[in-house]
Length: 238
Image (cartoon, rainbow, N blue to C red; front, top):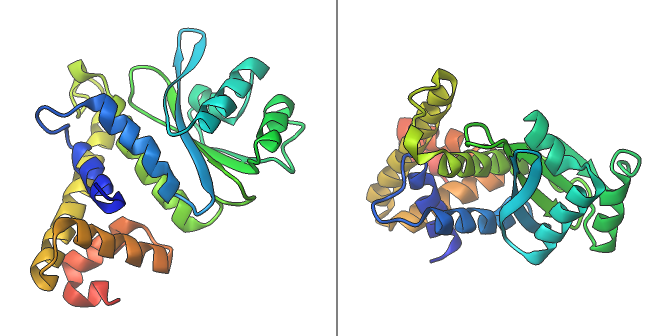
């Protein structure tokens, strides 16, 4: 399965996992797609808080796990703050040494110069998704932030407790988030279908067209999809 097929499967899974799907496999697929967030991304992981314990249940590479553990051992770090305080945390190894000295040292030793940690609303335990890069400012541009946010929404949906369902029926706030995620997934599906018909391409190539346009214009993939659905062929002129 290529990258675009993996993204398509992950986006569809936000509306509820396909029958017989393996949630653990989908989560692993999600963190491995972290490499698509920015060119210099070198690792992706998920941090959860269970009681007073921080842990990393899924990660794309040993480097990401090592950096998460460096933060747990130091007692603080961007991944821990993002999960604990449910807010975005950006890290720059050059300027954040005083904020996170233990983590900064570990990051520099491993060639990591920046990271972003995004909160995951909705899961049973407080959580965050973490992305590590070998360059400074890797996640500062609009496009990496948009893709990171999309990935975070997908992971949040996959981590939602099964007994609550994908819509979080007992939590109106979570229900609103999940309904929005479902609407976004439907929008991507409609745009894929339109391109498949107009261009006589498969679903994976249709998603590839959307992603390429999103990257070229540093816009959200959802903005591009709306143009495709609403404006016809003009919305995906490449």
